[in-house]
Image 1 (cartoon, helix red, strand yellow):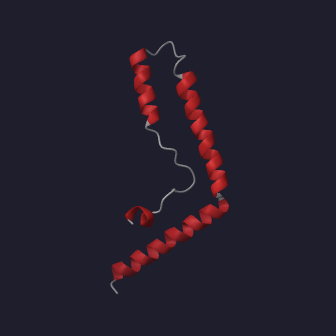
Image 2: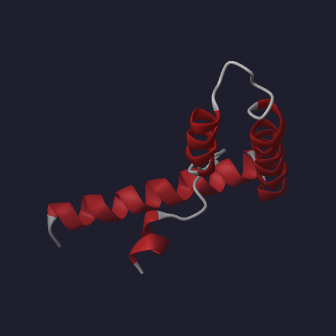
Image 3: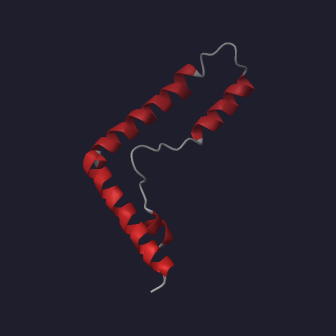
Length: 87
């Protein structure tokens, strides 16, 4: 076995152990609650806060809403590991 193969396997094990420990400390149920909270905050921001800004013109509001729609909620640990993405 080559050195790169060994280190690659060890790196995978380390990531797996880290993901497991993160899921124990921050369980999937807690992660789901936080993701829901952030999604609600983004929804309020887009539907209420941005619409009421009088200093922003309509074109800028549309651009802000478009940008807001591109946000990805990243909380805790990744939903997919690198191994999941590759296969």
